[in-house]
Length: 326
Ligand SMILES: Cc1cc2nc3c(=O)[nH]c(=O)nc-3n(C[C@H](O)[C@H](O)[C@H](O)COP(=O)(O)OP(=O)(O)OC[C@H]3O[C@@H](n4cnc5c(N)ncnc54)[C@H](O)[C@@H]3O)c2cc1C
Image 1: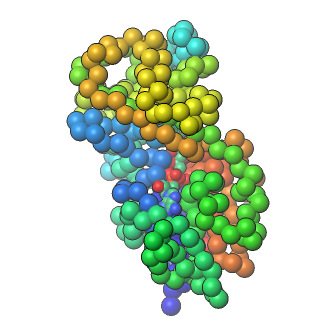
Image 2: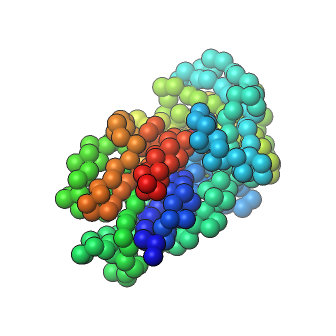
Image 3: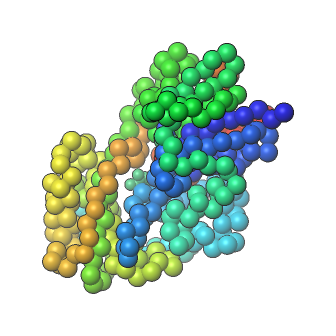
């Protein structure tokens, strides 16, 4: 009989592990949100659509390219050809044309399509936040906040940002102190839907030394419906300072900063929404690619083990999957 594995989290790392070990194990994935994708999600607020997590991704390793080959064939992944501006504070320094050959990849029609596609046969239970995991005798038991039980498993794999993993782990787990050391930086994403298109000399901008660190016209990505969607990300420093501030204050400030940078008409806005990402990037990654406790049958993987990027999520999950398969 196959051993059973509960995977917590249906971002790219959770779904990668599920898809790679499901031939050998009975796999069940739990996801707290109403859809898969995690930090590669897309926010739909009709008629506006925003990739409000990962903006694009790079592929440096052969194994990641190979893993995604079917999605390339089906054109679910395409290169983003765009003009990228570089700002220092408020001054525009240069505009670079990013060509297909520069390989800035995005999901099509939206970023969330990638994990959605890979997760098709991965046995995912949505809208289920696991709040407790308990080991009794040789089995793991999972519970939500109402103490509803979600079955017994031989193994548990956590694929969450470091701090969220700690919330579930017992201090006696061998790698607990190693995760405790990981600090993660967050940011705010401001989504702006406009009544009319704005015309800029570029499609996205990287901004140094400003409370706004990135902005992008979502519609400039391939196969998007043209709907005048502007995505604005704050800097990590600004997010750390304003973590407990009212959302409305943050929204207004980022909107004003962006307006100073690119001068759009504030009166022409149809919708504005702010999302707070508490865990975007680890200040320092561990030296390992994943943690595993073979006496307790529990493991942890995720982007923060490698480089806090999309490819890092895959690489960490891929390494753990190889270990599990052996
Ligand atoms: C604003 C932003 C911009 C970014 N830009 C880029 C970029 O341009 N390029 C790039 O390469 N990377 C970028 N990244 C990073 C990239 O998105 C991540 O590296 C990658 O998506 C991480 O995948 P993951 O599976 O490791 O984690 P996640 O995607 O965070 O997956 C974890 C999942 O676990 C779920 N979960 C959490 N707790 C529980 C629980 N208790 N029970 C059940 N489910 C739970 C979460 O809902 C989530 O779906 C960005 C990230 C953010 C936030």
